[in-house]
Structure formats: structure tokens, C-alpha cells
Length: 130
Image 1: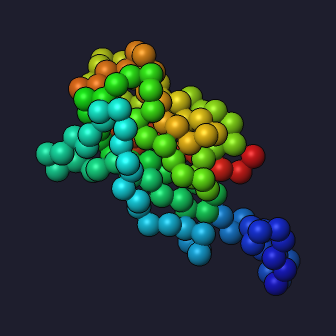
Image 2: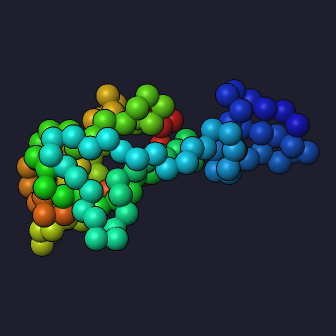
């Protein structure tokens, strides 16, 4: 067995696989998001806002409501941030999908076209690998 760089690539008996695709010590449990700018969890039995890391992938979940648009709804901590700015398409209370940007600084920002009656974070996942 040979481990190459940050425990990511493992070579065992001639087989190469990316260990980021499997559970390991770099995985985290769901962590409750600290919501900002008047965003709150939707409630009524829906998932609360949270994030986790599985290998090099970050996943968000939760249904939130009532916040301000074009300013951060949350900030992801170091280790959970994308290497470049991402434009994510999400479902909200409007009739068409909306945009949420995730920035390398960790800010998660709903676009001006979003509706704040509810906004789902469940469609947001990304790699932290450059």
C-alpha cells in the first residue's frame, strides 16, 4: 500500500482509488449552520440548515426562509470552502429556480432574483479541491 499526498490517492496491489470517495477521518457529521441576515430555519418538520464534508465534497441541506437577498445567508468555515466562486441553482418559493453563490471566502449569498418565502440549500454540493 502506498499513500500519495494528503492521504488522498491510495495504491494497493496495483489498484488505484481516490479515498475521498469513501468514509474516513476527514469526513464530518452534519454541523448546524449559523444563519445570518434574518434567515431562519423554515421549521414545520423540514431539515434545518447544516453542512458537512465527505472526502473533498461539501454538502449543504435545509430549508430556510425570510432573509435578506444579495447578502450572506451563512458563512462556511475554513476547510468547507470552494477554491473558486460557484453559481448554484436552487429551488425557492418562486416559480423558477434561483441562484445562490458560494464564494472562496465561505459566504453563501442568494441572488437578487431569489424569493425568501423559502429557499432550499439541498441542491448545493461542491468539491474543495482546486
